[in-house]
Image (cartoon, rainbow, N blue to C red; front, side, top):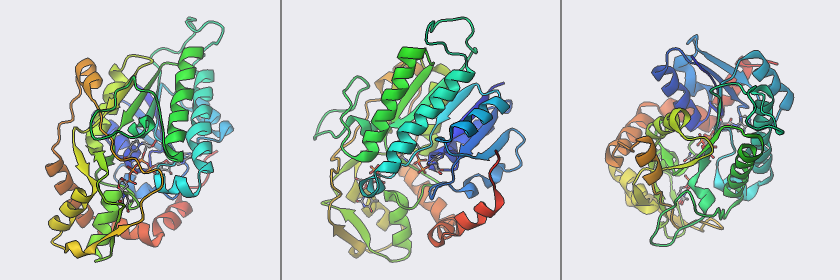
Length: 352
Ligand code: NAD
Ligand code: TYD
């Protein structure tokens, strides 16, 4: 029996994670807190609305008193921190909120967890600790910066972020590490590659291209389209996070990748082909400033030490993902029209 505080659980990966955990652990309680920014959508969670092991609370991770109250009300054993501003393009236009949410928000969570878990800076191995606790920070491979044509990211590499989003995630990683070193906070950091799958907000490459393709709209490919990402199915990622949460060695960082490098243009062409549309829709547009050329994850640590494997082929995953968007056109339409926010704002007020 554990109570897990999931932050950002109304977003893409968080909502998939909440459902994965409720399915897998019938005796766990999941408390999902989310500020419901533009990226949070409670429709992602409607299947579990009535699950008695699940509680949703609208809360901002920067709101210290509210987070404190949540820890006081629920006996939290573990925190999995997904809450973040997550879109690189937005971070180029409006960097500040990336720092307040991704860095300060993470520090607030760490501070409140430290207080309720009785971590003591003067004696980090004191016996008063709450047993079996963990703080898992969901980070990104983007903190390592960009790779050239060869090589892969390993956990020991220096962090060299190139855009405000990845710089804010790298900063959060540093704060999490410091709470481990200074206060003995039992932490893990996971750094995953690009996720794809159901419920991804249609500002990211794959759902944006599917949506535009279906509507016969232009498909904006940045620069020459030869940037490479290592695509990881979201459900495979959720299993990896669960593995690290339960088996990860305290204080360690684990990379999580799909062993699946693809150039953006090839993904776009695959979507066009699967949907039976024309490549004339492809429109090459001005490149993103600071655009990282290639990401590739070395999975050796998590596979050899924790026994997790990325068991899902991209061919199967992308086909299922495209089918999911085709079967859930209303889900995208509610987002595009903005209805998803108006509807849920009227349903969920402030809890504290
Ligand atoms: P997302 O943008 O879909 O979801 C983020 C969620 O966080 C939303 O529900 C949003 O409402 C919530 N949120 C934002 N600010 C908040 C705040 N101040 N307080 C509480 N909630 C807040 O993001 P995602 O794609 O699901 O990513 C989840 C995590 O995984 C992020 O930390 C991201 O950096 C990391 N990550 C994502 C990817 C990817 O490919 N999607 C890859 C690597 C790492
Ligand atoms: P994105 O999904 O924004 O993820 P990230 O920037 O975190 O990797 O973008 C994935 C890749 O696709 C990235 O190289 C930028 C590129 N891209 C486009 O070419 N066109 C687009 O409209 C978008 C959203 C992304």
